[in-house]
Image 1: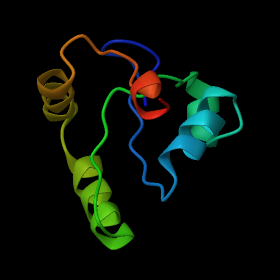
Image 2: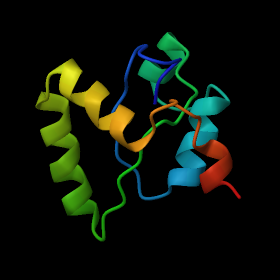
Image 3: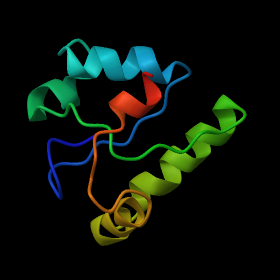
Image 4: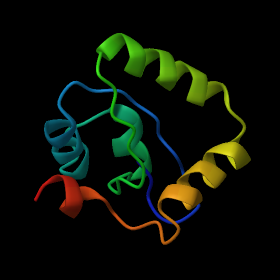
Length: 88
């Protein structure tokens, strides 16, 4: 989640992506997203198990910011909000 291109980044994990993003967009999600106005989903990685997702989340949180930006730019160069794609 972010508040705009190259803005504040939030990395999280959820078992229900649509519900979680809806909550964040409506200001009912994580405190961090509320505090920083993070309403744009710009990157997603699906995993078959929650354990794998949590492992990846922990790895990404240890990454340098530039690495995270590069990962997002590679998958979503225009930093489009993916909400419309996943909520279709």
